[in-house]
Length: 134
Ligand code: ATP
Image (tube, rainbow, N blue to C red; front, side):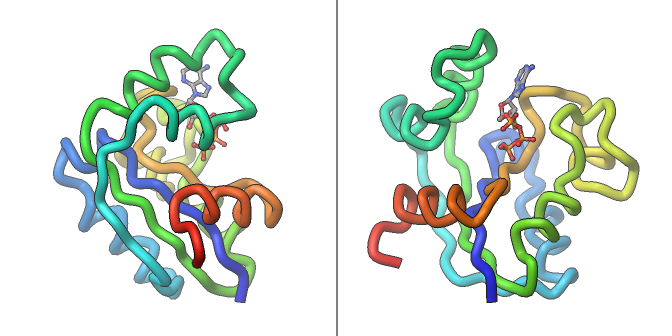
């Protein structure tokens, strides 16, 4: 099975939506390989978002993802990367389709509840960052 790295970002934890969001992944049939709640520092945020550190939107994103506890997960299943991204919906919660996590539960481009790896290469890179040795 394919593995993917998923984050339930600090807005998910703050809003009490961990159960709701995790439940959607479980109900879909993905399995939880690893799961940890933690508060990260800016350095880990920079590693995770290496491709975005130079972007205009990055400084407030960095502040947001370090603002409180988040839940990091490794999920596995057939085509898990694509399945998770379909469940997550478009980046901007205002534009994400109803029925998706972001479409149903977020109205923000930044505080959009979830992250999912976008390719097998980024999944393995991100799993190495969040769960070294897994
Ligand atoms: P993720 O990688 O978190 O699954 P994504 O692939 O939909 O989301 P990216 O383009 O990789 O989105 O951006 C990473 C994250 O940066 C987004 O999830 C969002 O939190 C934030 N972000 C992206 N674009 C913007 C923007 N224009 N304004 C504010 N925040 C943004």
